Length: 151
Length: 268
Image (cartoon, rainbow over all chains, first blue to last red; front, side, top):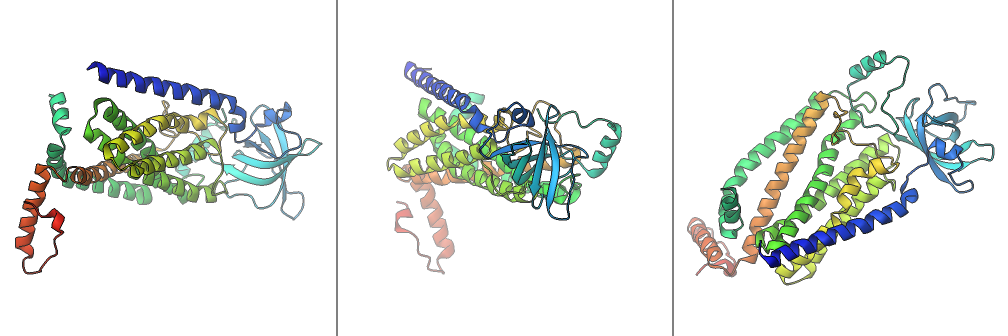
């Protein structure tokens, strides 16, 4: 490689390294703002903002969904398999909403610790399989929930 | 052997002739892959256990998203080669790839949005994956705009290549966004070191589609390159000879029809 070309190559490598470092530091600094939602553990530990609206994401706890009246009010618990947070929501739930499913809700924390959601989005996981396969998998893991969820 | 092939391919006249021979074959394979993938994905593959038939948009969405990243890397690498070795063809590969990559990015965003509404319950959210993919679209548009804004095409190509290289930091961010941050978008299904978390009957059509999209890109970039070569080298002898001979043949064929041939294109 001729010296001038080598020089240009080094220049480009240095440029890429510089930009990479700068971006890495920026992302690190804004890490908290880049989180799309807080986990139930964050909320219980008081990391989530108390007065502002924020998003809370987790898995809907099995057997926790209840509809107290005949209106659209629905109560359920969200978990990250560490801590649980109770959620109240009035409105139409997405089709994919079900127990054991990941959801992301947006709303505020009431002083009594219940999260009042204005919006519920379903978060689907990265697994795709035919219903028969899902059925046989379920039979194999009767007691537990799928092991590979929510890092 | 390989290096000799590489050197010869970097010469525009040689490349023009060779790529013209490749195109029909590539088109046939590409069409076969896409048709097989579509049939496998839309007809053969079973419905998903949770998403039902709606998951089938994966066969467009995921290959498009992969292509949006792949083409960007090709563009940046070609731009870098063009900058370092001043190879005209590499610069042309970089600038010819940009509109194709932008289209795939747009397609990935649109199909993702159409998928998001029924599944997540929203067209769009500002989470890490969606936002970084949108930035990728803007990077592509920036490269296209920068190249178009400078009249001297060699200088324009170099400026666009630098922008493409700067933007390459966004590629790992897009890929790892779903792991570094909490996002609404789910984690990777296929592109991870683990076993793919998609059933084999659904995976095969997806890979066929991905192969078909790759070939489509190859075809599109070859065609764009060929016209870019003709445009840039229009004053060189081999182009006038080539176009001239084609014009003459055309004229003998169309003599009856009184065709209006562009006077600039008539050879010596």
